[in-house]
Length: 287
Length: 256
Image 1 (spheres, rainbow over the protein chains, first blue to last red):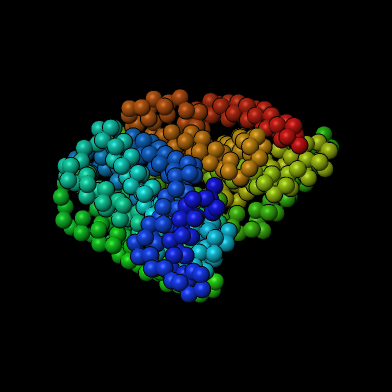
Image 2: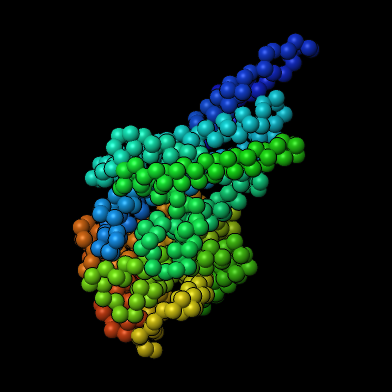
């Protein structure tokens, strides 16, 4: 399945080797960073879309939970203080975050597979920059995130969920969910670079998934009765990511929720990509 | 019969040993139910304030019944992963060559799943009690609850073994766990059946897992309900899954 010898790999190699001296001293112009990223990203995207199982499961599983919990927890509307919307409206934010976690695993597993198979080592011998390699590797994951977000939004609208913030809000929602997915993809890449095996990346998935359960995913924080749980949900950044997405669906334009949502998503991106960049340098040194 | 027991004991011992000697295998099956218990009983306890929510022992006990049965089902499912791994690694082929009575292999894996769940179930029970769960059922009811868990575990383990033996690859993991996950979550997990509305109510009413879940909650509340139905449904599921896993074994035998 990994196109190590296909056109994609040739493209990556071409983009990276163009900078190498050819024919005893004749040096070609080094491809720009954008070209390098593009070559790696193209391979990443093609590889991701060739592994249909990687696309279908992350799409179906969050939708399945949305369908079940959206109906099974419908009685939560009767709790005094619950927002005046259907539970399905309230729950639509969750698939976006669950999808982002799957993106983290996809991105991490793909990168780990390259490390395990030795392809990463061969790339490291080329003049390809580490930053291009990292950004390109995340390309496929981000494309998956785009597709996922569109599908979740489409399913939500088809099942009668209204977007309180309107068309513009839907666009902002897509932007926020893709930013969140990019941050989690960076986390996946960090885990892959740090541990070097797909098994280790997948082993972290349950831990990441638990962060959704221990957040305000199922009820607004002010309605969580158990004190310790409310405390955990308040300190859990995932609560703010969910609330940012949710605010666009059920509230409209809530500046505070959006600022916190985008703020935490940006912090996640900056932190994970910085650490992943450092881990990439370490791994390139090792090779 | 002696050869059957000999094989079953050997496979069960290996399954138990592998499970408990490897933290990466045993820990997820213990930690997951605990997280579900914490997330559902802790995070959703306000649901018990919904009008007509009439479960006397409280929301922690309400969710404990679900998490206990879920851990029991997933004890079986995780064993299916081990069977698939044994086929991937080639161990299962050697096992089939050496086993004098091959149906004992299925029984052995199922036995291993049961031991694994007994440990998980004990941990979940202690956690629920520490969290303040109120149990109003007496000794007989609690034995009934344990019986439900055992039967769910056996049915799930037979299903998982069957799928793993038909497909003989670790990639069967999603196919093993997804149907179990769906059947469990299409039962009245968060509120009693009469508070469900719409399609989920229609599905939950005919879902066999609903009878088991309601019976389990009845045992904890000390007022058993749907006991005969729950045990009959589970006995039927075990008979069906035993036939399915036997066919899976036959498929693996044919494949060599």
